[in-house]
Picture 1 (tube, rainbow, N blue to C red):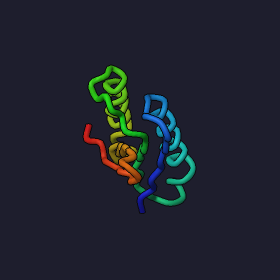
Picture 2 (picture 1 turned 135 degrees about the horizontal axis):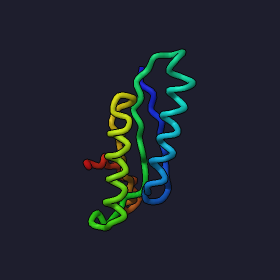
Picture 3 (picture 1 turned 90 degrees about the horizontal axis):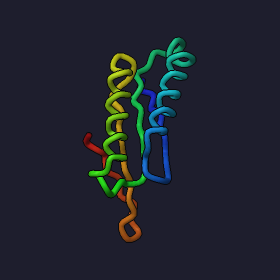
Length: 97
């Protein structure tokens, strides 16, 4: 059994989103896992960040890495998915970081 807490944003991701995902993982561990043994796969879905060279983007990736390090034994590595609109098509892409 795999639980997938998802933080869905209509805007670009930021560091505050990682704080919210941490709350989800904490809640699941405290209230759900004791009764139903499961693995946790956190996911962040947000609008595509165009400028991958910005300091803001670098801080976001650093927050991903801190989350993964802190939760190494608690859940799977954070999966980040970006979406973009291309003509009338909604495109999803998993972010490699």
